[in-house]
Length: 80
Image (cartoon, rainbow, N blue to C red; front, side, top):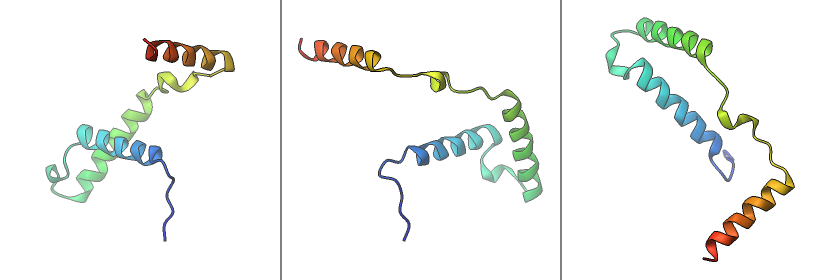
């Protein structure tokens, strides 16, 4: 039996990665043999690793005061 997390955020990230590869590298039917697939994937991997940047949201930190402020904003909007 396989136990997966209650939320699937990790699986969503995997699906997004496969989607990017398929769009950038090409559909599987575009290749005549596995050597072409391997070469194209390695070329994509090298280029992607050379140009990849961290997510813009990666350095966001939350403090108690920022959470309280956000919650009060949401509360004031929902009360209108």
